[in-house]
Amino acid sequence: MSVRNALLGLLLQHPRHGYELRAAFEALVGGKQNWEVKPAQIYTTLARLEEAGLVVQQGVEQESGPAKRIYAVTPQGRAELDAWFETGVEGAHQRDELFVKLMVSLALGSDIPEVGPQQVIRAQRSRLYQELHGLTAQRNAADPKSELAQIFLLDKAIMHVEADLRWLELLEARLDDICDQPLPEPEVKPRGRPKKMID
Amino acid sequence: MSTVSTDNLTKIYGSGPTAVTALGHVSIDVQSGQFVAVMGPSGCGKSTLLHMLGGLDRPTEGTVSIGDIPIAEMPDNRLTELRRRKIGFVFQFYNLIPVMTAVENAALPITLDGVRPAEAQKKAAEWLARFGLADRLHSRPDQLSGGQQQRVAIARALVAEPSLILADEPTGNLDSRASDEIAGLLADVSKKYERTVIMVTHDPRIAAYADRIIFLKDGKVVDETVLDTSTTESAVMLAEKIQGMGD
Image (cartoon, rainbow over all chains, first blue to last red):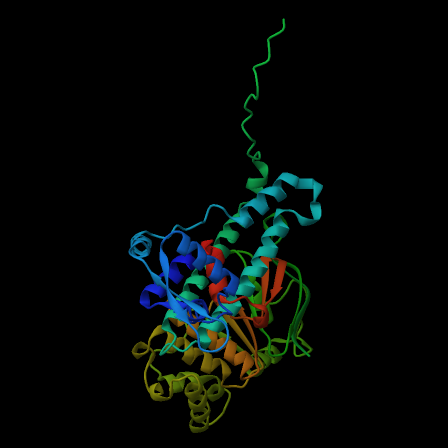
């Protein structure tokens, strides 16, 4: 949803064609090294927005080369954008890849002794420290006079990685206790017709 | 070249049934100019390791070498001298002398070593200036913020030009902003001024400034990770992943 709504917002700022839209989006997020959108994604999104009546073609810009269709936001698109701004963004913390990886490693247990939960924790810790090291370097290299928004974004990422590392620490400290507990089992529900009871 | 190494380093406190193994068979090798963080839960032996590396405590077994000189069996007077010339210490609570100014504090190790006060203070002032304290030379510790006091303490640790800096929770008493400053400064001490820095910390954010992290648990090295800036993903990609955003 976020790319779609961001594009909608940039079209509300002023009507643009796809190429310009892509450049504006990438500038906003601090460059395509941060968040790259492929041209195809821009054009697919524009087509979907148009289909949903949220944007409309306003004209064509033709200098040299192929014609560039210019899009503008409709009143419906404006309402959609307002709704986006008025709603909080959901934090997707429970559908966590590391957690499920860890649970699968617990489930496999002695079938995979060389890559047990302890190894999963270590590999993740190493990865997160690597990220934190790079983020810290980027943050310290950013210029607070012109890149304050980017700095805050980096701060957010740093705080999240820090929280993940602290969580890993807790997990590691209690790993033996976790291993001692039974794994959650699916609830067995009877399927199909109930079997006849035979005496 | 390795500046600091331990082989089979073991420290047992007490004896008989009440003996506690604070460190068990730790073998590490730290290259010259490296910035190493030592992490682990409290009681894991990280401070004990730092004390052994600094010659502040003697091992029960195994060896410690500083610049290829074994120090475990060294007589007290020689060890004291080596500690004064080759190793700088940074502590959590700065340990500055309250009645002395920043420059007097920073000059203290070499003043005690017989360098004339004027000369010692000139050298101390140079380190303080490198750490952004040129205009605070004559302030007393109580006139400085925590971060500034710790910078004075780091200048003091460097004034004798040691090749090794040992820091025990150097940011443990600081807020997060000052902590970042101090960690960045220690990274500079290693990169710009080419000293080996070994730092004990429990703060992941501070450890991330290092080149390498050693994890201790129950007196043993359980894990180790080498950090390399060049392979890191960008922040926004990471934020995107964390949020599960994106179309």
